[in-house]
Image (cartoon, rainbow, N blue to C red; front, top):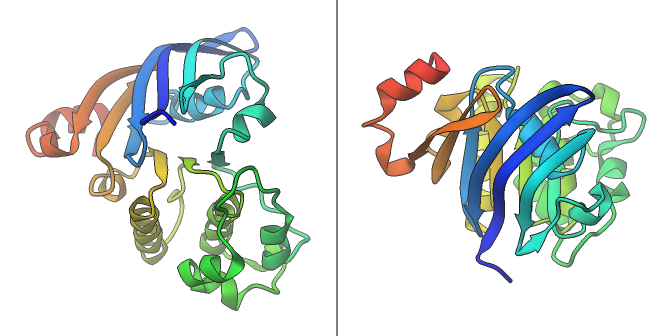
Amino acid sequence: MSSMALEVKNLESWYGESHILHGVDFSVRDGEVVTLLGRNGAGRSTILKTILGLTSKRTGSVDIYGKQTIGLPTYKIARLGVGFCPEERGIFASLSTEENLLLLPEISAGGMGLDEIYEMFPNLYERRNSPGTRLSGGEQQMLAMARILRTGAKLLLLDEITEGLAPVIVQKLGEVVGSLRKKGFTIVLVEQNFRFAAPLADRHYVVEHGRVVEVVNQSELAAKASLLNDYLGV
């Protein structure tokens, strides 16, 4: 298996006639955590959806664990070990927490069992019999993340997982991301909350107008703080 989990080169993408991505380049090694930072509308979420083939048209190169995927349908991309946690969460509101967790198919070996999920997300164990409509926003986000861990995916694409959540939940999600990293998961985080993302990632890619305009390594955060402030307004 390639030591490069994800390699994106000259990626362009369209929604209908709207040209959103204009030659995106970035890479993630196996076991790394990277972020896609930027303002709303910069194209960060579209990058994740384009990797998965969820836009109307895409060109360029997307290598996942050494396999070129630009021409593959979404379900085949997922089967390479990719899990996507969308910003809208997408849980089944009429099903209980546990039913949501049991519904997911296994795409590769090594998916987490319920006991491991409940150890990582104690709130979900307490609410395991509650329907999705009864869960708080933070609990829904935990469930959305937990579901993809059930599938055996090792490359996780997480879209705005902290948006609109209370600080205590954001802190918990930060602990979960750190724990997943220690377990060997590879993670791409789309984030606007830089204070959440800063300590978690090996590298930060700043996205503006559908392009990666800056790369900041963890060791460069202090030196490039002013630059990041200009781009992000943090």
